[in-house]
Length: 402
Ligand SMILES: [Zn+2]
Image (cartoon, rainbow, N blue to C red; front, side, top):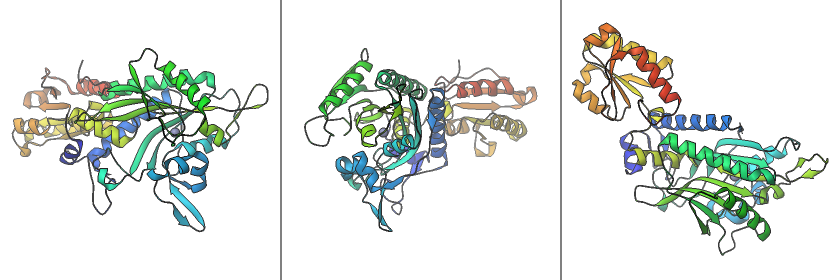
């Protein structure tokens, strides 16, 4: 596997500037394309799975995090508060408190749960500069987050549904889980105390992992509850958590969340926190390392390069690129003055589809496709090539051709 920091710079995906600061990478146009494609995939998968998206601000008052418990259990990872007109504002260390307030802002009947609230939102962590580098330890994080407000009876099915979204995403991204971990509290005082609730949540998650190869590890739980962590491994074999599913009885009670039951009384929902791809930063870092820049076609910054053999085929190459753009595909021309055909093919080695157009193809309205994996296809009508590529990209396939 590759080092994503080195490759990210070489491929013009992202970079940092000391004036912006350590742990605060910016995204160049090609990197932004990969990121947007990933975000679009996640939003689409969530919509199909019955999630509704919200937006909430990256700041909140200090009191909010005192209620959520972040202030007493997590403040060493938070940026110091900002004083403003007698108030203290905090850069949020997680999205949960905002989502709890959004839930609380409207009344809910027992017919609504499971209520699935999702957001790809910003959060901040005051990492020390010594551990920063690339996209894996950053201070500004874009989190693929969601909270499911549901009844106790619904928790296992919702957690299983989240696990399925995670599996589908890994297949589309061409990545693999290193292992599944059931993360439990360890000795020490960073957890909220309620042994009975911890036991119940841990039992529920263990039930969800029944039949899935996993390890139970103490000391890795969130401060408010146990979680399922899906671990990935980096180029040096170091493990980190990409996806999580957590069961939380604590925050619903801290924020006094409820729904009205069929009996007309107030009932407390459970909160399931879940993230399919974790932070966008870590997910892209892993994709770069795993694929060495040869992303699945639906994620590739450039999906097709048109290669006219000579100046004479430029109009056909132009038309092909326009046809691709109309279908939402990212295509560009590598013009003959950029070198021999062989040199241009080598330059485009990370582009999944290379469409060679010689005099014969131009006259027949055809293209000769070369795939990134070295396969050369027989010339076919340009329209057919674009249709098939568009279908494959639209279905988030990792196979280039079938
Ligand atoms: Zn959460």
